Length: 633
Image (cartoon, rainbow, N blue to C red; front, side, top):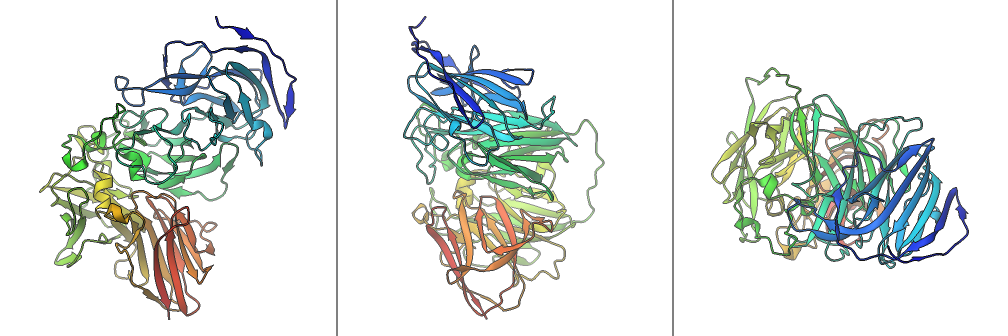
């Protein structure tokens, strides 16, 4: 038993929240580190009775295994229910609207704990009572009503100089806080996915290097040790995604569109009404949440992952030993051995129903050849694609930047034979296309039981077959050694149109944004493969479709603008991620957009006045990464 010191203070009532320090303090006692468990956020903590949830939380230090349980561990701080193991993420608080929460929070750490998130949710402004200070050994008692239905979180830190929401210190001191609609007797069948980031050092911003000692996690684990989710064909799937990390994460779902039902943060959640917001990639900034639903329409293995390529790099061993360079690795499975971090594997089962084969008798046939370009090195290679159809070759000559734009017809079956002329294995993912899992392009993972898509070995090939069901703007890029091969130049736009005959690239324009091949050029972004794009000419009164494609390997917060002098021109949004926008979202507005990796946006633009326009691409901090002049005649 530790020594107990008795103190007292008056109860405080602020903005509907009652909080007081209980009259006893416990001095922390040294003890062997406990093993932190992983929390899948399926069961709510505390005891709910007569409209009151009573919960006893404790902040403790423990031993966490973000990889396999037999791999090296980390000593971190985490929350626990008293009498139970500490967990990452912290215990799930989940109650219906109107529930009173009676919480006791013990700080068993050696430093003062700052806690945010235990106050009514849905307030227009942060409540003063939302920030609670708990001294070492103290217990804080808090009473409040849960607030509006939505997806939230609570967060703690012991670093007084650190932002409790955006800091990296005590990064695992966080847990989900979900408020269900009033009258809910059983929580919805959803999954709560809490994104975390542990780093050995503070991350003030910028590129996360290949040798950085860190872990991006979902519900306490890093791929390939994250939970595998399983559903049946026809199931409606709901995810609540909570980004408690300091990084921006464009979250991408393979093979399916999902509907973004709400966006929020720790204090508020805005639930959308009216037309659906259907996308394949949703950008989550630090401290933000979103809720999504999708229908598991096709069987197979699928991925839900961050599309910042550096956030899905294989995990550097926690003992600090360096990982070998990509070109030095010889792996058996690219998905399992070359990926890490923010990845979830999703299996959709077909309920045992054998579906009839609808293999078309005729397909349009293309060859996409992964090739070595000039000017590369072993560590910074120059790769690219060459597209063949009959006697036509794109590009016919010259460097292999940008990747050739592939134009397909909606509803027309296509066969794309991917030929590998590199000295290393590769694979191609058809980003945003609804297709059979086997052709999705995730080497070593995509496919069905007994039929898993292989990596394409050097001097080998793989035939991808699909029938694009909708017109729109999509992407193709590697899904093996993503950072190395994509940065080397292997990516391109995939456009699906209603009529190949009426497609006019002079008026239907792709702006493909990619990373430069060389680390020395990291301060710029390439636009259509160019460091210094040549001016373009537009005509007054001509209708243009601008297809903005961000397939950069990092920089998930770039801002694209179209300006006349210093004033934004006006364009009209018409599609997102290849999905046409409904009427209430297809609106005109200032020509600016913040882009996440793996997102595409389509805009209609009609110049009204002669003169020069300027297209700029800037970092989130405002640094100019690229610009191009449009001369309107």
